[in-house]
Image (cartoon, rainbow, N blue to C red; front, side, top):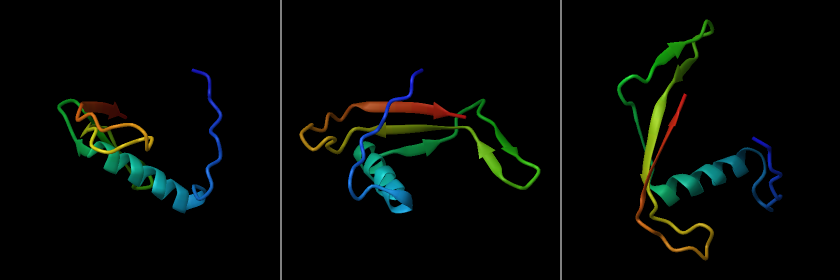
Length: 79
């Protein structure tokens, strides 16, 4: 999959920018993280926890500002 270049947006840089980015997505989709059957949790040798989880949400916020909320459900698994 080719990487695409992101346009720089003023005010979205560093830790504060990352925080703003994720807050926008979590509030836009009313996300809830759930574990489902078969998803694993592992501990690394330096005591870090790595878990598989599934994010479920519903489109409740506008993004970009011109779009309307649809109320549709979405789901995404990660490992």
